[in-house]
Every structure is written in structure tokens, then in C-alpha cells.
Image (cartoon, rainbow, N blue to C red; front, side, top):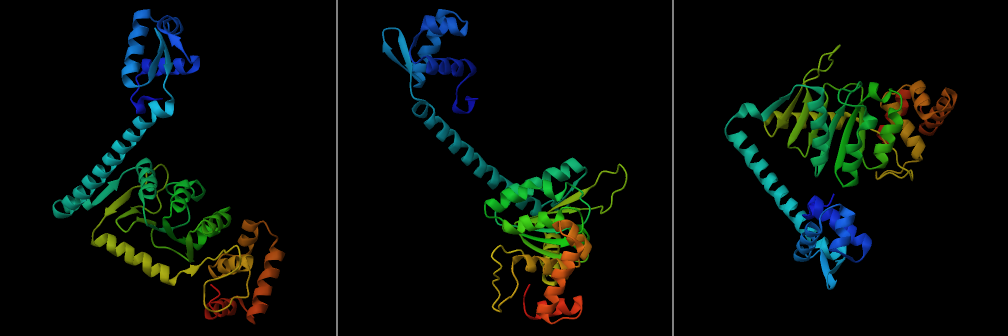
Length: 325
């Protein structure tokens, strides 16, 4: 366990035993460790040299405090890891630049299996520093949305997420609550009736694009890992175009919005309205939120009355005009 601090197996066992005993001699250590007295004496001599132990009396030894003996080692080890990580990042950038100058075919890497796709899906989010853009279609290829813990961790360290959900995905069991939880953590979410492809783009430098939308039977899904290129720029432009036409999904705990125009709706009403405008059926909303259909219909009628609307379409038009969403 302490090999990261530079201790071998016997050094660690000897040091741990010395810490528990407080003070010990070579004979006592040898008996406890099941080794010869000579081997125990050699181990103690090595610990003295390494600064792990100190001699308190003739032939008796005490441990040096762990934070003094091991702390500096761990700091040096961490510094070495940081330097190595910087070197890897520099080499990776040089590698990508070399690819761009030379073998352009390698700007697109094909991932031949679900395992490889899942690994890259996680890696892109774990390594993201600024922004992740996503198209989320109905029916998962890599993993269910609720298993994507990498997004929660990335949001926690300040990575921005902009996600566009397909209407059919929002109708799947548990998705409304899942999306609401992501929004509470900082995700910016919008919805459209249908999306053309699935996409994940990390830091505008790498995209993950499944190549087969509906793999059937035992067929393994394949995907393309697309690095900086004109194709990546086209995918980013596609995302931005869809983002502009998509309907915002709002869920604000205090019911306040940042728009200049005042909004008379509270948090629950805003969320319900955004789902309605996104095209999610009332029956699905009721099921997802654990409400009766009658309750949802009553709340929709209340929204229509606030907007002075006679139909759902008029409600959506009024919400857009008044910038409620």
C-alpha cells in the first residue's frame, strides 16, 4: 500500500510493526516478522538510513512520525506524477499536430466495439476541462443516462454541459427526473422533436460519433473518434444550429429567471411548461413526475389561463413571446 512512498514490502511491514509497538529491538522484530535477527537488524539499519526510524537506546528503535517520514516522499511522488502528466499532454499535442501535418486518415479513429465506445465516452468527460456538447437520442448505445456519473463529476469540477434531448428520450421512464437533476447541478438542457445523430464533443477538440444508429441483434456498435479537422468544425456547427432552434428546459429552484421580462411562473410551472413545449405528452409527464393525469391537466389549464391561451399552441407562442423559457 505504501509502495507509492518508496517502501518495499518488508520495509512497510517492519515500519508498521514498529509504529504499533512504539519501541522495539531486532530480536522482537525478528520474532514478530518470522525472520532472523540478522535480517531484522539489517531492516532497522535501512530504516535508520531512510529516515523511517530512530535509535532511542542501545539496540532499541522507535518510528519517526509518518507525516515526517512519509509526507515528503508522497509530495515528491505527486510532483513526479504532475510532471509526467504535463509531459504526456505535451506529447499528445505534438502527436495530434503530427497527425494533422501527415497522415490525415488518422484524424478519424474507428472504435469497433461497445467496450471501446464506452471507454472513450467516459474518457472524453473525465478529461474535459471547459465544455461538453451532446446530442442525446432515444435508446442508449453506450449506457443508460442514469449511469453517466462522469457528467456529474465533470459538472462538479466546473465543466460546462450543453445537452439537447430528443423528445422520445424524455418520454422514457425516469428521464424527466434525471434531466431535472442534471439541470440542478448546472447542465444547460434543451429539447427538440428529433435529432439526426448522437454526438459528444469535448472542449471543441474531439468528437465521438456513433456510425450505426440502430444496430440490431448481436451487432457491435461502431463509432468514430474525430479529432480537430474540418469535419469536427462541421459537427460543432451542426450542434450550434440545433441548439438555436431547440426549446430550453427550465428547472430553477427559486423560480427566478435571468430574462429581462418578468415571469409569473414558479419553478414547477416553468419545468412543466418546458416539457410541454418540448412535445412531451401530458400522460408521460404525469407518469414521470408521479402525478395523476388530472393533476397535470389542471396545471396545464392554469398555465393557459395565465397566458390567456385557448390551445397548447397558443400557450407555447405566448411563452416564447414573453420569454418565459
